Amino acid sequence: MTILIKQTLSHLPESVERPDYDLAQVTVGIVHLGVGAFHRAHQAVFTDAVLSRDQSWGICGVSLRSPETRDALAPQDGLYTLKVQDGGGERLRVIGSVVEVLVAPEDPELVLARMAAAQTRIVSLTVTEKGYCHHPATGMLDENHPDIRHDIAHPGRPKSAVGFVVEALARRQAAGLAPFTLLSCDNLPSNGHVLKRVVERFAALRDPELATYVAGVASPSTMIDRIVPATTDMDRASVAATLGAEDAWPVVTEPFKQWVLEDDFPLGRPRWEDYGAVFVHDVSAFEMMKLRLLNGSHSTLAYLGYLAGAETVSDAMQLPGMEELVEGLMREEATPTLPPLPGIDLAQYRAELVARFKNPALRHRTWQIAMDGSQKLPQRLLGTIRDRIATEMPYDRLALGIAAWMRYARGIDESGKAIDVRDPLAGKIASLTEALSTPGEIVDAYLGLSDVFGQELADDRDFRAAVINALSTLMTHGAAVTLSSYGRS
Ligand code: CS2
Image 1 (spheres, rainbow, N blue to C red):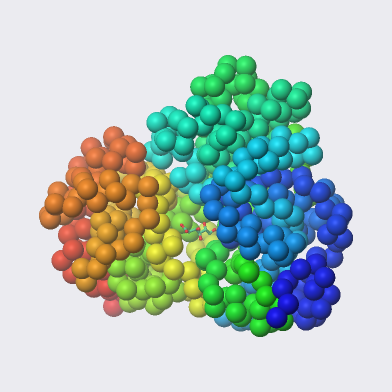
Image 2: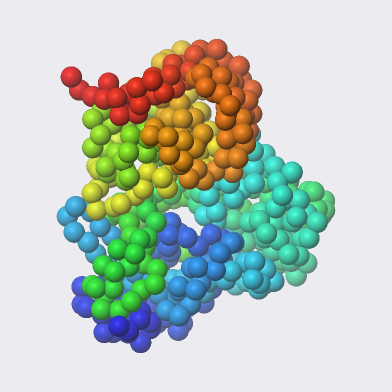
């Protein structure tokens, strides 16, 4: 079978959408750090649409670790297929906006050169929560992080996203260029502020003059939403069958997509609003809505679902009691903590979320969402719990989500089998809790992780009691039985 390349575009079936612009005219305007499936199913798609009218916004994607994406896309002229699917069917579209993929560890110099080039006006990031090398509980740069220490010692050969951004900014300063706009697209509250704070601190550790330049960088916050499971071989086979050409790395996603951004791009930006993005003055209320409703319930259902034997989110939604738990968590516990969102119908948003989670066409593994809980739970569940405590309101379902993470992250499932826990704190958690057996001891060990819980929450006796209670139920009855108690009687 032929492969997906520029020359095969004209032979694809008519139903497949493809770039309607001249790929040869596209130049790089954006360098994106973390060119994974999420970026390729979201920002790269909005940008692809913009390229029809303005070809100066091509994307240079950078992988900070592995060469896999580059190895897949380079032989395909950067082209890949987006497969959008739900129970009602599927649509295929070939995306041409990622014009180049670089692998940072292979050639950090080339990555820095692209970032420092005058034509690069935006550096965007999807590097996941842990990629910010910050303390999740406080948002401050973790100055002892091994990659940060490395990048301070070797600024010209960085490893971390923070190190790349600051070195590229230093080169722009030296060249007399204005800074690019930084655009964090990760699931962190005030992601632009978090990013700005860590890069400013890192720059200050390097040199005060650089810190002054970095202080002037624009770093708008964004809320970004689309569910994008990891691509499987089955997806590859099904895309190839429809295309009549092989695509080494298509991405599969849902029809829904949302992008809300603050409009602060001193060097200009693509007109993403022409294709559905929304520009607002302050994005924080939207971020909070998404993190607390979508991601908070996503994590809760991932831990409980995994423990109860559900491989995917849609399977987990079929477990007796799960839908009621998720609905109750969102409506009764999380929604009252949200700031006002004029023009947003939260009941409709929640109903849409439940339908998205139930999308049977997406095989989104609970294991995938369960990753990096120590980095995710502070903004997904713990902030909500803090607000509930402050208003003296109950938070049983949120506490169950935390307890389910604690049960999961110890690394043994309900039948005694090992769980492949992926989390920067996995080793620490295993060694802290290994010898413990009672829910009280286990919860206390976890609460000692100040990077996750901070001090105040760890000291809150009612919170401790609520989590112990939930963990004890989980340990005694298992996740499936615990969940079923939420079912409608
Ligand atoms: C998920 C998110 O993996 C996870 O932790 O909760 O990636 C989620 O699918 C996206 O935020 C949806 O926009």
